[in-house]
Amino acid sequence: MDGVSEQARDRDSSFAKALFTGRLQEEMVFPYPRPERAELRRVEQLITDGREFLDTYYDPQRVEEQRWVGDDIIKGLGERGLLGLYISPEYGGQGLSQTGYCRVMEEFGGYDSSLSVVMGVHQSIGCKPIHLFGSAEQQARYLPDLAAGRKLAGFALTEPGAGSDAYHITTRAERQSDGSWLLNGEKRWIGNGGRDVLCVFARSEQGHVALIVEGGFDGVDAAERHDTLGLRGNDLRRVRFRDVRVPAENLLGEPGDGFRIAMHTLNNGRMSLGTGVVGGAKRLVEQAIVHTTEREQFGRPLADFELVEDKVGWMVSYLYGLESMSYLTTGLVDSGVEDYSVESAMAKVAATEYMWYAVNRVFQLAGGEAYMGGSPLAKTLRDTRVFPIFEGANDVLSAFIALSGLKAVSEEVSDLQHLSLSDPLRSLGTIADYVVGRLARGVRPDRLEAAHPTLRRQAGQVADQVGQLRDTAEKLLRLYGDDVQARQRQQKRIAAAASDIYAQVATISRTTALFADQGVEASGQERYIATSFCNRAAARVGAQFDRVDDNDDPDVHSIARLAYNRRGYSPRLF
Ligand SMILES: Cc1cc2nc3c(=O)[nH]c(=O)nc-3n(C[C@H](O)[C@H](O)[C@H](O)COP(=O)(O)OP(=O)(O)OC[C@H]3O[C@@H](n4cnc5c(N)ncnc54)[C@H](O)[C@@H]3O)c2cc1C
Image (cartoon, rainbow, N blue to C red; front, side, top):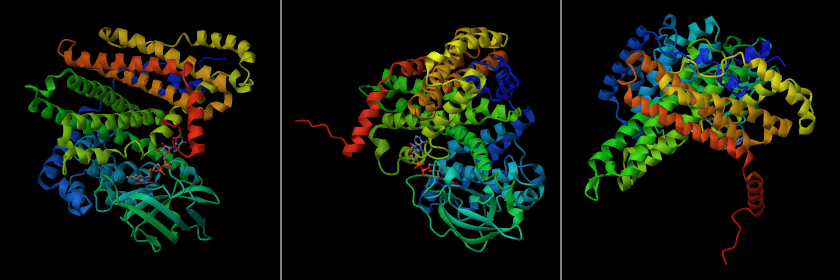
């Protein structure tokens, strides 16, 4: 086996996939990426303008009641450049990098979830297909109005019969003799679905297609609005298409590109959900501190109790890891890395799971007050519960992370392709080849040499974990063969381990950059936060690997099957 074949080098264009193959592509993640100074200034200005405007005109309570953020707000955001953040200045946008865009979205995530989701639907997934895949003519036709907020965009993929399994949508587009498309079908839960421009995904004789559909086209019906638990300012619609004629020039890409366009858009769009969570969580930490330092019980502020400290300490250190991971991912995109699908999925899953736990803990700290009508924490709880569900359900993304990594390993270990994988004994000869392969790979750096000496222990841990990840991935492939695709419990473990490894790398890289800038002593707080995050993440990784070998999966399988058969909980108490 050639440890560093052409195929492997191609794959190394993905930092996270390479982790599964045992490679730590240090040069991709050190030094920690940061935008140009001029862009940072621009971002700060946009944030300040947005804040001033919203502090004056945005009323979350009114938004809840009206169930819409308000046309005046959209207009004001558009006038301040906040609805065309990454769109090229040629079309009236701000031309921000992915990092710049996500940094602004972080701010809005901390302001109000409804608002940030409306902005995210418009930019992260609504305009994005036109920005990434539109022809120059399509971009010139649509982007100026969208960047200025004169029009709002949406992304229409989900259908009643196709949620996570988006490949199997049934909306049909039939090509007509003049090149136009006749669109029929139904989408549901579409943000901005009743507005101006929708990127609609459909199937056709020629494969999946992505079409730009205007709300005013004959046959588009978006009259029905969905009621929702939270994010009540996000206008969510059922959209029906009855013999809608879509002009030929509104096809994005080529016929057959539709599914790829949808998935690429979601991969990209997920990043701003992750950084929006970073903004929301910063706010939660502040709320927890205000409450626990002011409220006294047993003659002391709540903040003085160890179990309260634990919650705040955990929130801060995990948030640091999450922030490091989210902006390392946007930095990878800005550096021109083409395949960031696994990293963006990792950041989305980590961020949205964290948010749910963090809200739950802050809610707990607030006590009964949080449960009373009109409490802001109750709104946060309602608003954020959907995060692990939309933009890719977290369990589905975990499987995606694991299978992407396993595929990278199976391609690299050439013998795994023509062995009978279900027969581990036959793999002995190959294991010998594999050892040679590993030695050949030894020339590549497999440690984080660039990590600051203060973080040597954490960097060493990461290197060991990457080796274990590679061995575990190969073990699973040898053990299960193709059936590994059905082994979701095992997939979830290595996905979680890989994700925590990636988060540690990001944290070490970021903290190294900080030490270089400010010195270790001046960055004392960050040092403790970073080492605590890394040490806890390393322990989680170890626990996941242990569970790969030592688990009760067969029992869980039997218990669930029995419960399905008996249609519920059946053990008798007496
Ligand atoms: C508030 C909100 C806004 C939305 N906005 C939009 C939008 O603007 N545009 C748009 O196109 N869509 C939108 N959606 C749809 C959203 O993307 C889907 O809800 C999501 O894709 C999941 O699909 P589903 O809800 O049908 O769940 P299902 O696919 O039915 O899945 C339900 C659950 O089953 C489990 N599951 C599913 N598949 C697997 C699997 N393979 N392995 C293991 N477990 C699995 C997971 O736990 C999952 O959470 C929105 C949804 C909501 C709630």
